[in-house]
Amino acid sequence: MDRLQRKPIIVANWKMHKSIASSIEFVHALAPKITVPSTQVFIAPSFTALHAVAAAAKPYPAITVGAQNMYAAAEGAYTGEVSGIQLVDAGAQFVILGHSERRKLCKETDQFINEKVKIALLSKLIPILCVGESFDERKAGKSEEVVGEQLKKCLNDITSVQGRGTIIAYEPVWAIGTNCAATPPMVQEMHQFCRDWLIRHWGDEAANKVHLIYGGSVKPDNALSLMQQKDVDGLLVGGASLAVESFSEIVNFDLGET
Ligand code: PGA
Image (cartoon, rainbow, N blue to C red; front, side):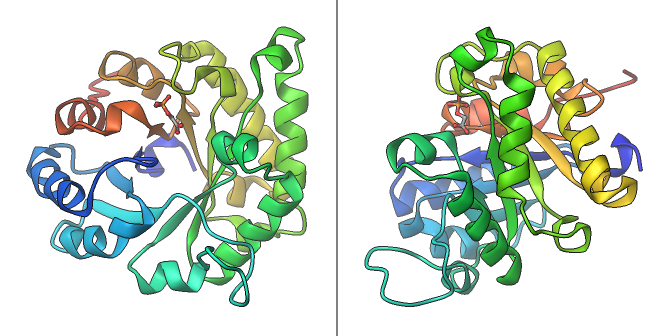
């Protein structure tokens, strides 16, 4: 399967922003601005707005709604946590897991993220697994080693059949929220590494079904050059997804004849 058969996925990660009302308003304002029929837009609002945003997005087939996190258990005594089943109940179809902010602020480990990926798959949520190296790790020439280790641990015990619909987000920590995106060749190199890793572990067919998306300071002016890379199947957008104007520009990137 080549890139053309993997429809582009552009994810809005709103992090801890927006009220319920402004989240709904965004969906209705964005929908008519999506002009590229093949692109799927994923929106990850706060838990508090998830149900309302999923309902608002129902009339728009181009928009899929999901969550920014979930807990690694189906149910139980986990005060303050949210399960995969509850996310599905609220209208979620995907969940972002292992974001570097959670790894750093909440001390999430690869092993814990692996449990979450398994529960997400059991709950019929598409996991968006985030991986990426720090600045020091890149400087030390360890990007592939670090990302390879994250893939190995976070996808431990997940078969090609279970994992084929997974999305992997390569998000170098140093590029997130810094206005300093990785260059398109850097991103292609790391995505190629991830694709090869998946082929080695899951075989061609399943590996080629995985969307590899890039996140880290994606803006309207770099979206096209990133999407032109052979193994970039989509983008994960933080800051620039908060305004309809900038996010719709990103969503409507045009590969043209390239
Ligand atoms: P950014 O965030 O686009 O603001 O860099 C990306 C992310 O954290 O997913």
